[in-house]
Image (cartoon, rainbow, N blue to C red; front, side, top):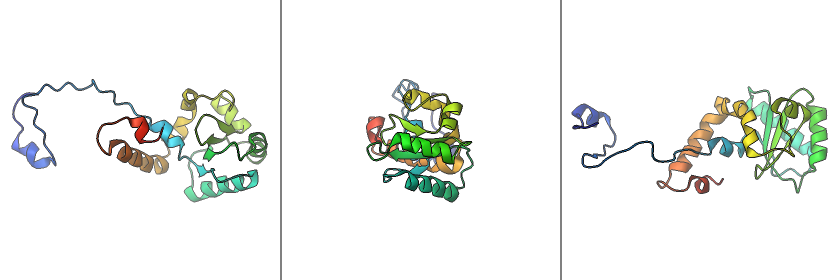
Length: 173
């Protein structure tokens, strides 16, 4: 609004910018972010080093116990399909977790490895996955407060460092 900044506001503020000679129009800047997609790079067990399925299974179980995850789905990220046999990994996940969904994102997030339970629940397959279909699983990791709060804090530090710039480049998307 118009007018002078009160002394009360000045005393409570860390920093005051006066725009008394300027016109401020909020809402013109595109402020959307890519946080939900960025979080996929960090959700669940780190899989980038695994070249064989049994080690991958051990890591999924270890991370689950360590984090005491409250969500029903088991996540992993960073899978390298040049190192892992996706079909064999899927068979193993189906065998080990027949009643629990498992989604392991590839390092570039272009696809994932999923067991049959995950396909049944989330209604997409690794061959039909596109980033727009990931919304079906976002609730699982966006509502996990122990995971998401530190991720959001890290994301905001990265995205606001150095002023306004291309957000995709800053956060590595």
